[in-house]
Length: 469
Image (cartoon, rainbow, N blue to C red; front, side, top):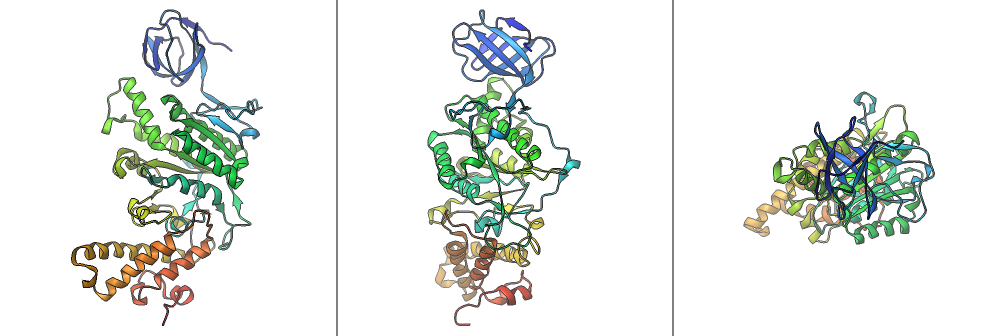
């Protein structure tokens, strides 16, 4: 059903056009703007008053005439066509297929703005996800239904790490600590916002080479796309994920990169609309806007499907107190922080030991889930590596030769922890049992009387004796 058409625009300001408001126009309602040269352009209502509506055009407003243009309010929000054909397809940021295989053949559409999940209907996440990466599985465990972002910086290998997680992530059956051959795999919804073509090509080539592309739905909004498309892209991706998870009962892993580009687009659109800026020029509603994306992850009672989110954001100037990582940390359940110093020393993945954490880890590890010693071992590794940082700072002041024998053993532990436990090839898929055994191996550099956070029973059962003992 076509809506009413209005002729003429009141004002054109970049990609935003102002027009007389029709009755019963809603926020985020889709609009079609017609002109003589370009034909039909789509947009959506981004602001309203009693007499006018501000419409953000999906694209450029070049060539629009204030006198000759026509505006049609379509009477519905933006929708994504969903169906069984979502997987193995590539879409632009507006949810339109761009892979040359034609449209999705389905009569089903869903509002891309989504609905908040009723907290009463949520199921608490408890299922361990094996990523095959020791730094994550052993110390910052990912749980099914969790939102666990990667905080990175310019030039750090966050894309390689995300691609490795997509290839290797598996849901193990309770108590399984070996290979993931019999584990449940994920379908993946991958969303790229404002990335360069070579980054998008890297992910597509990696998905194709590893054979997972048939189980991936890709939404690409490249760097040359309009700002509004970057704001719409993650909502389209999450709508596709909700359909696959809650209607098709699949386990969905959503990877979104780069959330910094998303927030920059939000700041740009906010500036165009003349809104009062908040911290570092970002709009005051940045927190609630990010929450509207992050909170679409989770598990719902009555559905066997789930949505697990891994947003990636590059911290400007490696500043973890910047508004984007700062607010993301409040909303999400932990963070994986990549460390530039580790990266410069050749460690991959360069996951920082101390600032990284997973707030749901305690509920997804232990007997019946991973292994009985997992919790104690992780706590001991964190404590020992924290001591390593203190000893290294001391050594930089007084010199390594002036350190006590105990401190020198901690330095050796730190070197072995980074070279044996953290470092692994990007094609190496470590089972959780292998990860925990490596943890005990690196702890063998320390005297047993220093292992105060682990049960004595576990030391006798799992600890590797140091050579010569």
